Image 1: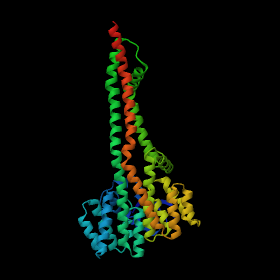
Image 2 (image 1 turned 180 degrees about the vertical axis):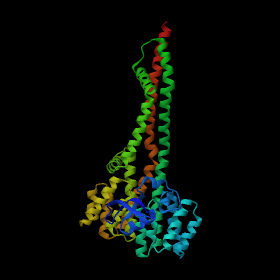
Image 3 (image 1 turned 135 degrees about the horizontal axis):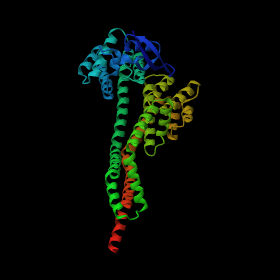
Image 4 (image 1 turned 90 degrees about the horizontal axis):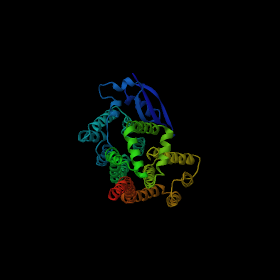
Length: 410
């Protein structure tokens, strides 16, 4: 049997990791889940095992690419089939046959085989932690315990659709600014490599003293031409170093905290993250998940280590007997309006409804911010373009003007 390194979360929400032997990663996942740990990542402990080819094992299935839209459609379709009274095995067979993604077909085939061997649906889905998140698995487990599986799936569909909408809106809003910034960068490179050196030869031929701005431009151009390989190497090392730093716990936490302070984009990221938190908490609460477990699960869905740490501290406060309102105030990430809504929800016993209202409010604010994002960035881009054009004009046309005046005097 092969050795597999695994990483997961226990019932208290703490990260656990270790090495376990098993025939496949799927078998290891079963053992991990049976011990009360939700797997996050499973991979061969030996590097050579990664290169092995063969029959479709559980680990090979984990490595295949299943898109977010596949899980979204699966949640919607399985809800429809279960509501219509279709048995789970027959429903999965139909979804497997109709799936357009071969990777999703393989996942559903493995889930069917796992169910056929007597496992529960949540355990069968847990064999694929790269496809189904810990929050997703927790909600399915709650649906099994409460007998409201079809209701859980439609709520998961709404949750995944909301996340997809947010990501699409961000990509759409950043498309134009990214294009402008890229065009500016290309223009600067072309000007420094081709335009300024040509003008430098002309200026040198006249032997006249050049203005300060022109000397700065020529010096910067010479620096880029002479040291471009060092600059390129430095950029590559910087990118890979930054990515490696982000993989560390401290690096991810620091970057996620700094992201919230970025002008314009920071407030959008904060509101989108809190909208995801509120929507996830409302979904878990409505499905009957205990508050402490709900906060543990929600901390894994917010996709921001800084906010996740705040949520985990809220959970610790609730465990000590503090109210949701008090822990929310201590977290320091909610606005007074949201805190007031949480207070009303906690007093009335309708916290899940109020958290849904909070999610809807943040979602509306994010939609508005994203729609006006281009308008907010446009003045900054225009200012940057204006400064770049001004520098080029001062550096190139001023000496030409001076040379023209000298020629006329002669």
